[in-house]
Length: 288
Image (cartoon, rainbow, N blue to C red; front, side):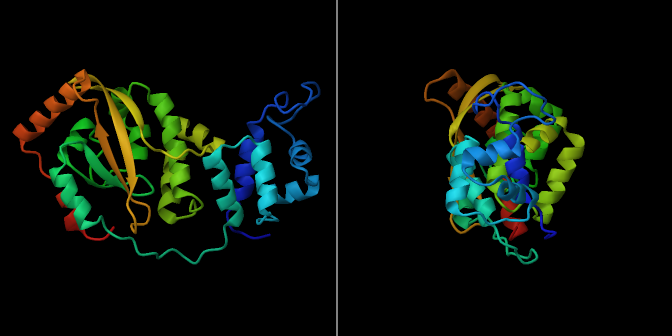
């Protein structure tokens, strides 16, 4: 058996254990030693042999056909993002040792961060902040160059106080992190971060074990800012082509709203304080 990480098998097992036997049409009676559906039940519903499904979970077969993957996705009730993730895991092949060149934040984007009148920042596929303007850092100190947003969100008590719906956002953050790193969970930096959070955060251990996948896109956020109080902001996330998964994130408030006024107050405070450009710090650091 290969000594490569068994990402496909781990994902199938995690999702199987979250399935309700009753929802899948199986009687609730009988002794079940583990939560969720049995392997043979998943195999029956997917129209494959129990032995073949066992090989998939154990990592003895890592490349099921598209038809098998689609059948398993249907049985496991996966949404579009999770189904795409399952296909990626099923098609993953051995990769050479890490050494991929990581590009820096595009110069044009750094210039944009200097002039845009909204909180904006760039993050890597593993949620490292690569560049940020002062207003973004004023919204949350975790949005500063060199900070990993997932680590800060889960471990920094100030972040728990900042976000009104912290528990729900934590679930979305972890699912978004898994979707963002995709099949590259064996990347050394990703492995180190996952290991650290697994040791230090009970919430992360629980959520990571679920193998939830969700693409983080536009949406609303509620936060209780220590300086201006409650705000509701919208976020937009734009992928940057040719940057190995970098994302430009922009926060904004509805025009004329109370939140827009509070965001303006933060902007004025940043201007008065003469906050230095975090984007400039990222530019000076060169390629990431």
